[in-house]
Amino acid sequence: MKPYSTDFRQKILETKQKTGESIQETAELSSVSYSFVQKLLKRYEEERTVEPFASRRRSAGQAKAINRSELEKLVFEDNDATLQQLCIRLEEKTGVKISVPTMCRLLQKLELNRKKKTLHALRVRK
Image (cartoon, rainbow, N blue to C red):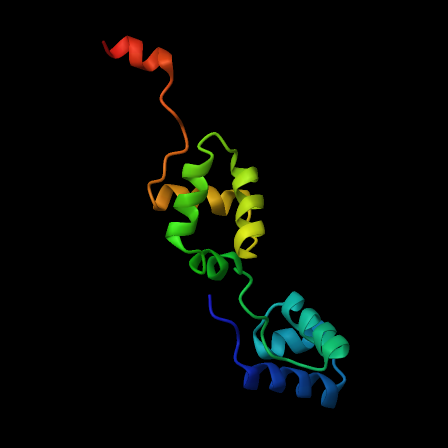
């Protein structure tokens, strides 16, 4: 769902200030929820802006910044490393910090397998 426009937000704020109505009355008059008006007023008081918040999904941009060859090199250097260890090593080498679930999704997307074939698996196939 797209955020409300800045103009609309500004009109709600001006209406509230001019009329002195309650938050509930302002919300009903503008056809928005009570909580939206409440958060809008709080944000304006604290930050003096009615602009919508920036996108909350930040890791996607960081994940795109990761070089595939760097990630492959990390996985091939230590195939038994846990996802947490790979995240730490990636941050040390590139300065890009990502979460464990993001690392998991990247490895799946790039089809990089971290698991070694065990000796048992080789014996069963023979």
